[in-house]
Image (spheres, rainbow, N blue to C red):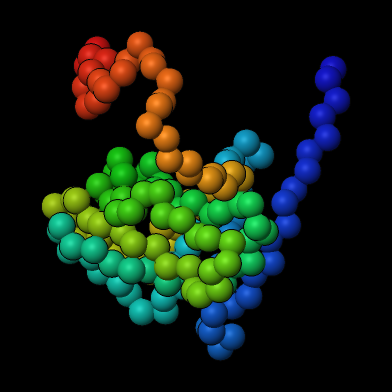
Length: 155
């Protein structure tokens, strides 16, 4: 049986509003890549057909440099309610210290209601690399070349 050592990146958080409750994000299964983000609104939020809503979480995150938080849709909401994260994936930069909010859009035909504690999105923590762009008149050739949208076929 293989032996695996699992490391966890620690992320510090605090409440945006200390007077309001917060649902601490958690992984629902051992293999989950995303932490569930929940609404912290104590008032019912309704998003109508083709409208958007900015949903508070009452969380401020301190993400380590070299990492970002990616806000992604929940597949169940997309399938069952046609509700998704509009700017998917949304990025939480390591130097951001404001409240994490989730921008949802309702593509469904029915109004979508959100109560306190409802799971609204996933938070995936991802490592990234910084790049330096260098201008040049010469770039390497590739088989694809300038082939863009649809150039590799549809099937």
